[in-house]
Length: 599
Image (tube, rainbow, N blue to C red):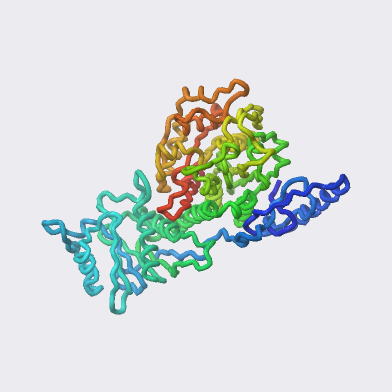
């Protein structure tokens, strides 16, 4: 069912938040029939309406409804954009650093351009190329080096104001050892992604509108130089992210243009690729940072609708409502959703490439837009209930990856982006500890903990990917367990898979994206913890090895003899306060992985 036909709404335009709901019931059979007729008429009108606003704003305008309907929230934010307010234009522009008249000139330098004094307390310029630039800039570089003992160490930077007709400011940014620098390092972010973030921070601090960036002291091969330009553009656009959409007086950067003086003829394509990946990660950040009275299941469906509308040549959207999910027997997903006044949305975006399809894959994201814990309520210090808006980090990464893939347009691979979205709330009709639910494949699950709900929704979503989409490989991504946070901290995601091939492909994608994943053991013996005396399986084991038993639970719903599968637990890196909150982790990794599947 296309989203335009899904009957989203409650008689009002959907515009961001949906905190107050109505759940009126038809007073009679005649009233119910009239409401159904009204919905059919609006569905027909929806088919005639183009564009994403048609998808997102056409409401099922019947005053009475058999199901709760989202309404605009009168006390919260109403118009919430999913696009950046502004993005700097980044482009390759051949030229010499000394000739630049930008507000800020950034020179990426290596440590072999400097020499230290015997006591290591001071340094001086050794590179002849840098000395010539220093002379052209009126000794500004010597000032930085002597005043700050600058040595070109990786991640170091210093800025000074410059007089004359050239740039207003010049910055030296250290890249470390020239013979060891890698555009794509074995672990973590590219030094050029880091340089991009450094550039945008310096531009904001010095109110620069125009920036020029050059590399000094190294001759990268042309292919590497182009890729470095793409990584820098990616890091710059991501580094410009700030959580400002809910502030009345945001302090926005004035940066408008960035000229890269390196990269060659292939730089333009690399920069565009870096931009596409950054836009995907930015969308993931916007979704994850949004409060739960804005980012509801309906809001996620609207975000998917916008992706589909913006790339209608390759993307198709289907949103299944509760009744559709009931017909498919999604008892695990709907059991979690039952206690919420927000209607669940089962979101299915499909990317279809031009030409031959060599492989079909699925990316499945956990979409709990708020997780109270249910009757196993998150309570007390350390429960993180106030942060449970980020429990849809997996769906943010999934939709972010969809955005990036829609821009990259990889060949040979059909990608299904699937999100079973709902809230996990407390209500008299809701899920109780001890209840038994039935999955879409008939497997029965004893729910011994209502706060282990994400794996239930993922199970039905992965069954859909196999049975309705016929995929050959599945990656699920979720903020699933606190146990993984304890094991790996807030910078590294846990990777679980019985397939060495999947582990290798996802590891390569993570390396290319500059995101950190670590393969965790699938200790089959721990599956004994999930045995139930009254059902086929329980949804949790003991506290020991909780991230592993969660992965083993998910494995029960995948035909691993026919479908390759991997689970990525991003409970740690989905949100980092020191990095501004929402990170968008996983969006670029998944996009890189998907793009590689058709090669």
